[in-house]
Length: 204
Image (tube, rainbow, N blue to C red; front, side, top):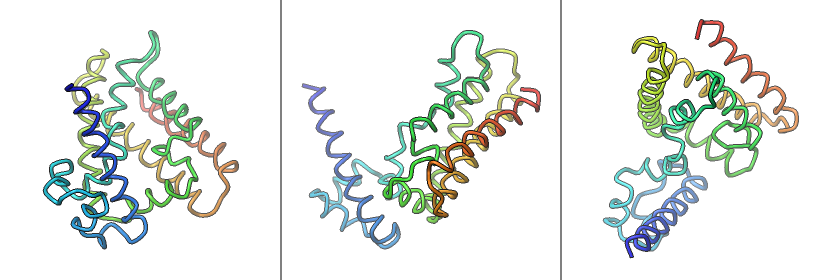
């Protein structure tokens, strides 16, 4: 019975988030009041805030499953694979899957979602909070992997996540500029390999 209740909660959460993002993409994040989102989702305003304490959570829910991902990749890497090799492989696999988080996805809704996040200061601020948590988690995983002290691990985590963030935004921008995905893809792969090679050259 508990499982069924949780499934129902997930369905309600997804319905609210989907209604909100649909409105945001049509009119802009700052132009849509929470009361309108609640009405569109068929819930009360208090119910909406029970699922999403802040308006920004309605958007970032879409990528919540990526939080802590780099740390998980490092911990689950194959025997003999270095942390940077694992992170490089994971990013390249994401490009191959057209994972929206890599920027290499030209679906109109994905393109519009990224544009909204990149152009909305409050969403950017919340994204940086998530990035900070990701850095801490990745640094912890790097320390656990052995051979790195706390400071070195923190520096590497910051550099690795910054590289991924720059890559994702640059790849999205290439598509936003009107370049076809088939043309962007090999350049995106080359850029990812260059980025992780630079980190390796720094001695990690």
